[in-house]
Each structure stands twice: as structure tokens, then as C-alpha cells.
Length: 61
Image 1: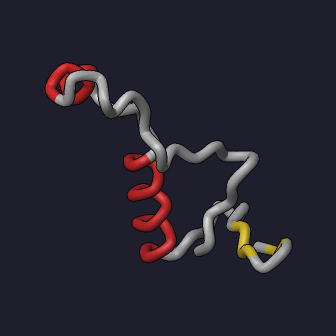
Image 2: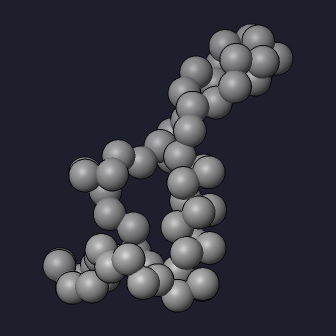
């Protein structure tokens, strides 16, 4: 773990359960929207606006 520009980056293999649970939630949130959502909304929602790239945007844990 080290601090880089006000972010705490967890690189260790030994994580606490709270950190692991938060990382798992962010992993599940980081996916494209389902195709049935595009069909239901008439293609007004085309992509997930909250999508996160692992290298560009770091988590503020």
C-alpha cells in the first residue's frame, strides 16, 4: 500500500475484508449496460457513464 496523489492504492495480497468487499463491488459495477436496457429505453441510454478504466481513474478507498 502506498499513497499516490491522495489515493491509497492497495497492491498487497493481504487485504482486509472491508477493502476486499469494496473492491468486489467496484468490480461488479464496472461493466457495460445490458442490451435489453438499450432496447427498453429506445437507445437513449447507450453506454455506462460511470465506467472506470483501471489505469486512468483510481479508486478512492
